[in-house]
Length: 166
Image (cartoon, rainbow, N blue to C red; front, side, top):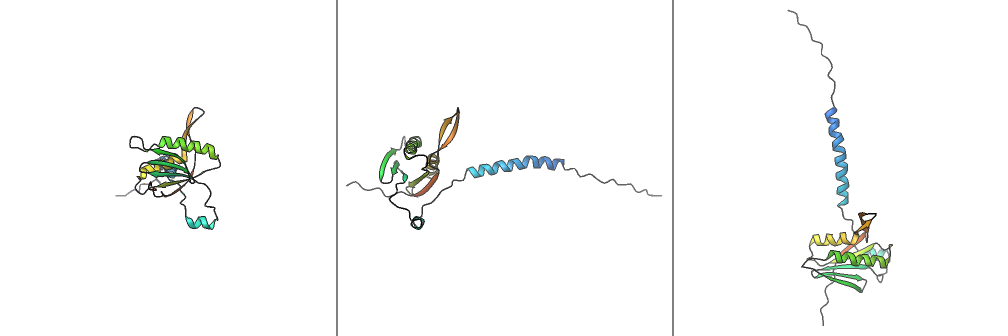
């Protein structure tokens, strides 16, 4: 009995399904990277040593939002601008945005820095809401809503103690 060797043909490599996977996977990964970048809050933390190194004058007025359990205090250096109390036991971020928009008009477009000072017991979500409110506000441009820039350079710190009334 003779055995005949079957001639084996070389198998072709079919990478169609792999290419389909790559065509779907690459855009999904790129899109998710953009969303991850958007959720990062960029902050500058004030350091007294850096201020001394740069010879900055402490008498320069800084725009401050002090977050307390009772509400917000908006200050321009030592000058109080407005005190915003809680509304229905919730922080009034809409009123804060209106006050900051007015301050932006008075201080000019070149002013981009703001200092947010909070008491130790302030909820993290409230603090993030204040940061978002200080950075941008919704504005209507050409029949569409966009985020207009207010004060993108945010610094954080501890709120000063409340002075007792005499």
